[in-house]
Image: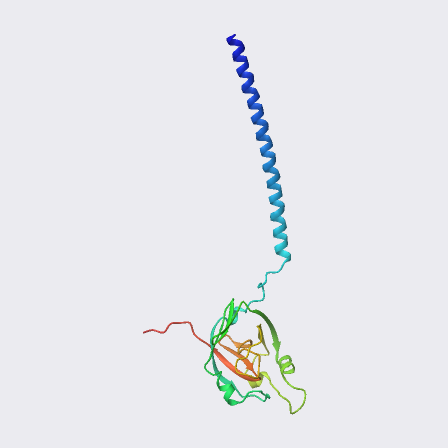
Length: 204
């Protein structure tokens, strides 16, 4: 009788072990299926990220102009402007600031603006910004003090603004990079130069 009970117990243990082993195999199959599906999802997301452009990638303000700038002077040109001397004078001494995520003139701030940068040569710039007649508005690199044959032109898009009247521009929303420490921009067809503000601290 003891032998019979022992055989029964052994058979029960073997049956329980086989049942547990079968359950573990099923669980492993489920895990394997889930892992395969997760891998497919990751692959799809990765592929989509390569196809779908990032909303700001390649369209932020170029790093060359990041930082603060102060408008130092009005540049004498032969352009025809919608501003007089009084309006132009209001820009002198004002501050422009650029960063990866914002564009600011005085207290007017545009966040996450879309920017375009392209290289323009002297002829392109003259043709794009001058009139066709002999008595029409004319602007050249030479008038602006630009000696290089070509420079970077940065255009920043923003909603229409009413800063000082006569124009929807924000000063500094389109600039020519004269050099690493000077930029040139127009407001109402009046041209200005701004100088970079040094970030170096002055000794006491």
